[in-house]
Amino acid sequence: MFEFYQFVIIPIIIGIVEVVKRAGLPCKFSPLVSLALGLFFGFVFLDTFKESIIIGFIVGLSATGLYSGSKNLNEAVRKKPQ
Image (cartoon, rainbow, N blue to C red; front, side, top):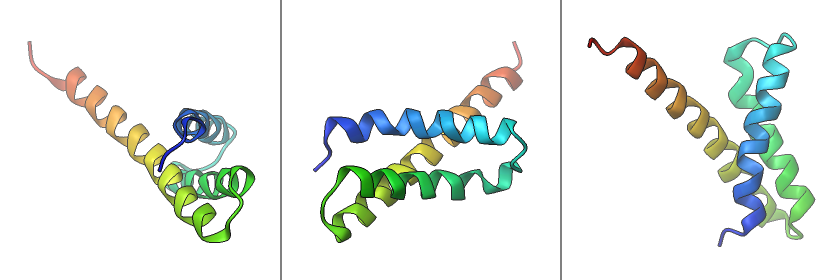
């Protein structure tokens, strides 16, 4: 189901969202930007409309989850008493 480019797009989306946030976008809107970018890349790389939407949602939400999960893990490691 997943192609190689779909896995490569996830870190690209994370990077683009980070650049947009540093440009002034409030953090609460970053999941929406990630989802929009996922849909955009879905339409760029896929031919069928249904598949573009489904894969776009999966890639966009995966990018959001990967960023959120790694951020939470990093915060938990920093707060851990030694």
